[in-house]
Length: 215
Image (cartoon, rainbow, N blue to C red; front, top):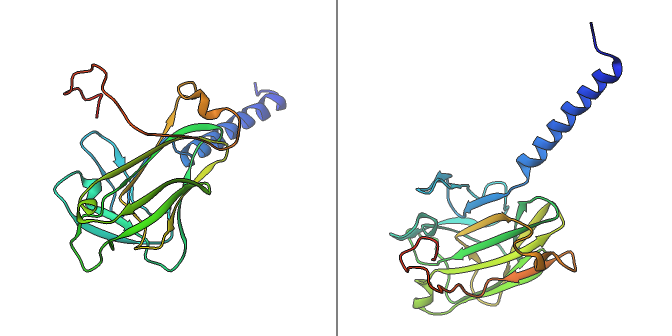
């Protein structure tokens, strides 16, 4: 015996709701790792899937770097175009808190294209200045710079932009984004659409120095 029209329509609506929920979850990211400047994606030894820039940024060029360290330092996205701002558009889940991290390492290029030094530029998140980068010396060129921010987001995407300064051209080696438990950083979500909690330092207060939980 066939079900009533009401039951059939209910089943159809449930199926449609499931479809749209899956569509949203597939586009919004909870865990995103971009290997900036890489030609192909890869999976590292920890099982983390690193993606290329494709689909996230429309400007810049890929540069290969000479390094024996972690793979994300072997490439960079360098923004040589004559424009003031270069933006990654990152899909996120609305009304969520995320950890956003970038790495900058200029190193030594393996091709004719290279990262010009000295260099200075700003990095913004949804038009708010996150940090200013300045590289002046050979020591700066060989130093790896990490920047992290905890950010409350009420939109469905984040614009992480590299804004040209007076010297050189902006660049980035990797961008990582992780969705956080909202209760872990409650203060980030209070009192406004855009809330920052910028990472300053991490201190070992008793954990053994060889522990993988402290880096």
